[in-house]
Length: 33
Image (cartoon, rainbow, N blue to C red):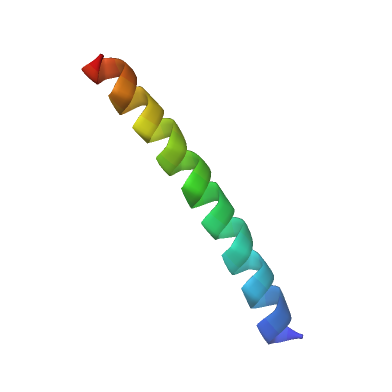
């Protein structure tokens, strides 16, 4: 149970980090061009 919930939260955090990274990359590319 604990492992399952922790893995789920880890996946959620990973998704959020990927979203933030994608947004930052888009912002950087917009600034560059």
